[in-house]
Image 1 (spheres, rainbow, N blue to C red):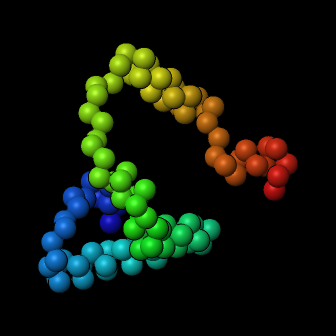
Image 2 (cartoon, helix red, strand yellow):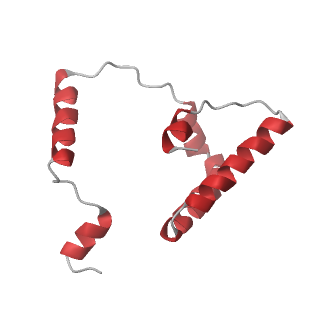
Length: 104
């Protein structure tokens, strides 16, 4: 399964056992593809989904109406600028910033 397939997959809220089994299998495949340094983050996120997502504040955010305002010209310009920064190599990973600051 490619990243694009994961991102574009539609959420299905059915209780179909076969669907659930297939989805769980796909999740296992994805976990097996993770680099070892990402496993802790995934475990924390999964724990959040199971436990913390029941918090009333989180539920209120999840149930809040979506923002459907169109992008302004300023928003579009900022997005283009960030794309240009990325293409020009002016964006650094957390690890690179730590390395440059001597924190590793």
